Image (cartoon, rainbow, N blue to C red; front, side, top):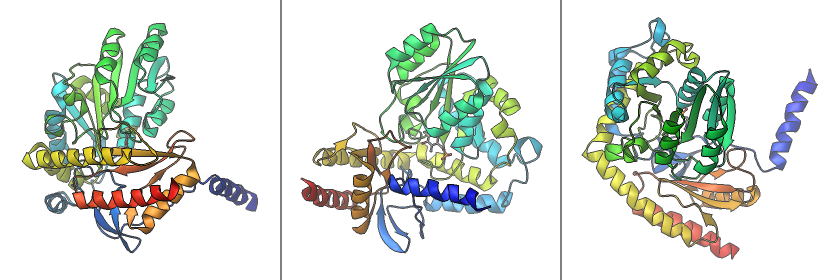
Length: 395
Ligand SMILES: *Cc1c(COP(=O)(O)O)cnc(C)c1O
């Protein structure tokens, strides 16, 4: 039996040799700017908790109340007994909050964004369809495209000229354009109005993954589509609720016919146990915070931190990405150098993840500094001091 294990051991040794071994850290306290990680106090720049809601007392209370009302588990899949009042209410809330881009909006709540993407792409694209996918799309969109068995054409990142040429040349019966709104490892925003224009001209669906825009961008944090004031019945908005919303799960919001199709046909929706109803109950509470004055205040504070961090990163010897979002990458290049820098910051109590291939293209390993409204200006001061010390060591 050993050769099987030996093959994996060889594979792991290769991963080590390339500086690509990933290590999980264990958080001993809730996700927050200051937290205990593996027994040490750290300032975290690793989370996607952009609004600092993950440990918000109102959400913790809503989760507890949801558990008292609906129990611990849903007991079944959505179509076979597991669909709770908490899920139904959240879907109504989401349709109202996100669905302004379409008449007759409806929402579908998923356990995770990964599943929402698999579900949407496989249900809408099949053999004979062509999916046009941005080169930097999230892994879950790539996997959904593969699973769909549609023909997949990858266009260069944000290159709407290239996309236009591909659409022009395509005679597929069903066309889908798929893109992140805010790209998760670069923080830049897709050319959304132009993408919609192309979709309309070529009779294509436009599926937008707003994982990093929802809660942060647009009026009341309604997301990237609202930010651009786009409207179309061919738009499909997907967002995760474990990032800015601070809980877990994901949504697809679209015209009611699209959603009904997903309920009937999307296997990652149908063949899985409905998530804990209390989580849905907590997300409804989160939406009220996101949409209200507190959400506005948190977004304004986050924006200040973003602008400060941009200026600060420009003063380092490395290559910041031109991002106006909470994702502020600093490209170092080589895997080893990136790991060393992350390790030095780590010793100073700064948790800044090193992102390496295959998450990003080879040669573009980077620090992914993720900002949150939970950070204070003092936290940014501390990060600045850590980076400055490091750059003095290298130049
Ligand atoms: C995080 C993320 C997902 C997956 O969402 P989960 O709810 O974490 O499964 C999908 N798309 C993008 C762009 C993401 O960043």
